[in-house]
Image (cartoon, rainbow, N blue to C red; front, top):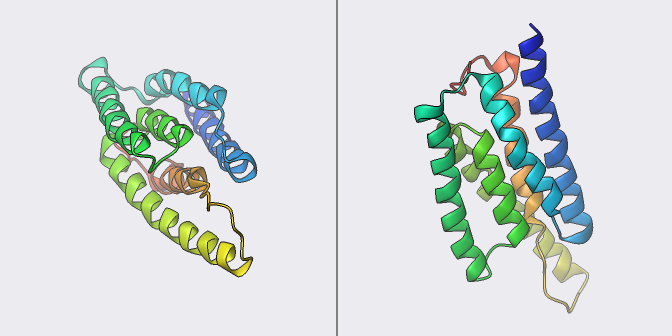
Length: 163
């Protein structure tokens, strides 16, 4: 029972961190390094509380995170994505089951598209001259919260594949 409280406490901490990331990205167009580092450093505790084995479970989490970082760093290099967004998604890849990470990316892309259309419209309506900056951390955080809420909460059962 105490282990369940610890497990869900870690998920609550992740949810709070995602909310902070969304808020700071909206306000300052920046996701702090200390926040993404905290998310990444909390992952091993989550693996332990989930009962993941080092091989192949944890190795697979690292592999997905490494692949995500490689692809997203390429998007950063061509200026299609911000550095904070890359780090936040990479840190999330350490938490989210590989089978659900694709779901997170699809939800993020859809929400990011809606966010871009809404902000672009607002930008045009206000006749702003400066370059449009989309706080994509909002879409990342919302997608992460969606996956947590639908696949990791007790009512969701063990759909995530973690105990």
